[in-house]
Length: 96
Image (cartoon, helix red, strand yellow):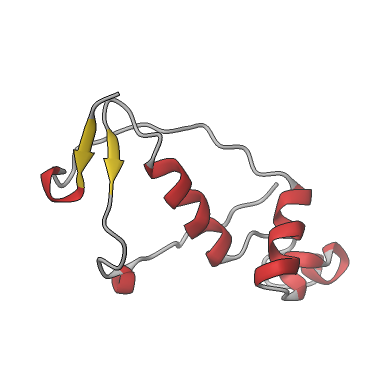
């Protein structure tokens, strides 16, 4: 597999790396370890929230993103740690 380094990536160029299916158990397990808010760990409380159900945490979504970056096609995208994810936006909810 060819490797593409971050500085070589073209803005707007699409690559694929999925699909990645998230299960209810994965959402709960990740949240229990890293982000134990009830909207991520408790189905009954999450159902009464503004999200109307269990959702994955932003930390979980970011972890999935990092995992998928190594599987992008046609080139595997390699990044250097600490490049400044300060403007990262994860607006879409992930549900099981």
